[in-house]
Length: 236
Ligand code: BV8
Ligand code: ZN
Image 1 (cartoon, rainbow, N blue to C red):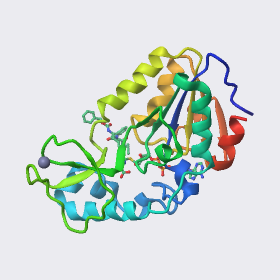
Image 2: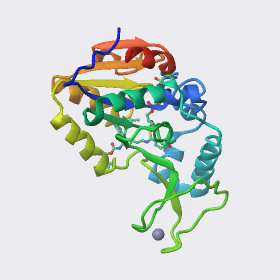
Image 3: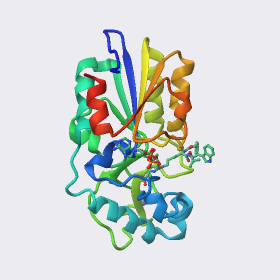
Image 4: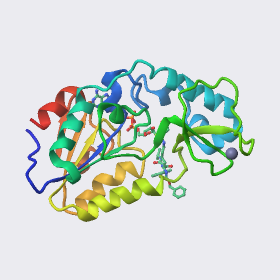
């Protein structure tokens, strides 16, 4: 069943690792997911970084290298097409850090967990910078000497206020609100709670996922299947 998009529809889309699975990017919690072979507390938390910063850098460097020849898939492109139809009545919020939505051409987009291709300082307020390098030794900050780190949001860290403000602003503007989650297991907050926020605001909720995730019962419409096939058909 397609999503009906009329001249008043405001569409808020949340994506997770599953939308990039068909591009060859590993997910986190599937059978071959990153958090099956690694403890996220060791690799994606400030405490893990403080305990072993080089181990954390090696993990992120390996993920950067794995993105060298990765391209957006039909699901990323379908979201670009729907953004072009809806204009400012569209907002894409992604938990993904690999940048495939931007590569596909999405512009009204919030990377709520940051971007793995940027680096920032763990010690000072230096502006984050683009960085595709693989760091096999610990890179120090030129300005303060503290270790640099990837510009991603780790567990226990706050979501960037700019990202939360963009979501709030969109929800406040939105009449005839439709929420669509794609390829996400619904266990990481605050992203997993967005469906409830939209429902409280009277919006309809859709889910496209390869399997039923943790928060499936909170969606009005559920389409189980690969995003690269299901999403283009959903907007047909
Ligand atoms: C915060 C980024 C507050 C870097 C990531 C207890 C209860 C509730 C909450 C908490 C709690 N204890 C702690 C918390 C808070 C915590 C949290 O939610 N923990 C969970 C684990 C309980 N959250 C936080 O800490 C967040 N911050 O709350 O701040 C605060 C306020 C002020 C001051 C200080 C703090 C920050 C969370 C950010 C975590 N960062 N990583 C990196 O990538 O390394 S999270 C990690 O999970 C991923 O990066 C991703 O962003 C996120 C979500 O994963 P998914 O994208 O959903 O991926 P997953 O593999 O799980 O699922 C993929 C799905 O796709 C599957 O369902 C699969 O079936 C499906 N799929 C597969 N293939 C396809 C497909 N679907 C369609 N098509 C396919 N082809
Ligand atoms: Zn610094």
